[in-house]
Length: 193
Image 1 (tube, helix red, strand yellow):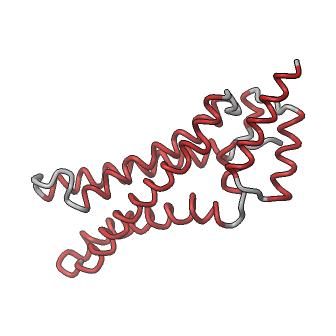
Image 2 (tube, helix red, strand yellow):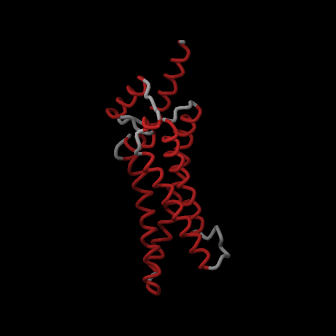
Image 3 (tube, one colour):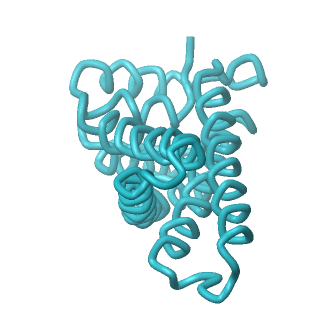
């Protein structure tokens, strides 16, 4: 069975990649979602809940800025420039994950009153809930497609990538090194022909 680069990314450097790329953003998003549901119920006594909601929203935005700034140059650009996406399944998983960061960043700006600062509270609430919904939909698309075996969409692992995958599970090496090595070995391979 082969896996998407999304899945490889989460499994490498265990448990740190899983914590940074999955646990932290998901915990913050769940906190935002839960507090968003509690605020109308608590009405007058929602002070702390609102604060937790706002802080989680800002932290989630900051987390995604970091994630996007790291993943685009180290993972997405090398894969795209070398045509190494493992079919459209792999591309959907990675791009929907990165796109999920955009509503979170916008939510952080909304919470910092840098966006729609003159909108009335009801409109701001609608925008906040829409951004949260967009994040949840995109992140779930990323998770679902990320767990799919790309061979169902016609992906054929080369002998080299099978060996690479094999070594990933033993070494848990740094993802950037692995992608760079894979790029170089493919480059060398094409020179020999």
